[in-house]
Image (tube, rainbow, N blue to C red):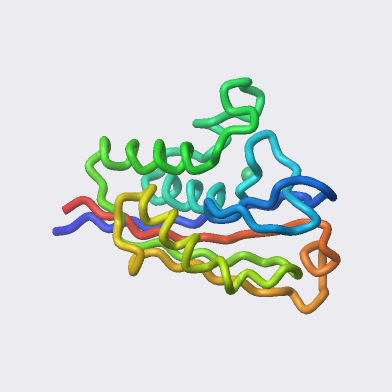
Length: 160
Ligand code: MG
């Protein structure tokens, strides 16, 4: 019997003026970016938590503490590759992942396929197993007021 596991991840970062905006491994030109210890890629952080959650291996804060200088300003794609390697070491393969980015502006549609390609490359799976979706919150809440970005993600992994 194949041992299937699912996991869920959620992350929020505040937005501030003049910072880089990096989502799903892709730099997006915008007046605001995420406040963070790392590069602030909130999509990758949610995805890491979904993958770690599926394997019941804790969360991103446990593996890559933001109190550590090692992770200051780090490219979150490095963290995602490390999570994928950890799952492989535990005997898991990744079935698929799906995430939803909630952000009022800018429109993310033009960047979605590049995000999928970047994430798929880091996870070592085909891009047709990686879904990235974006939605506004109709100006409601912190995302709608452009004070922050939230991302939720799910992942399915399995041991053959
Ligand atoms: Mg984070």
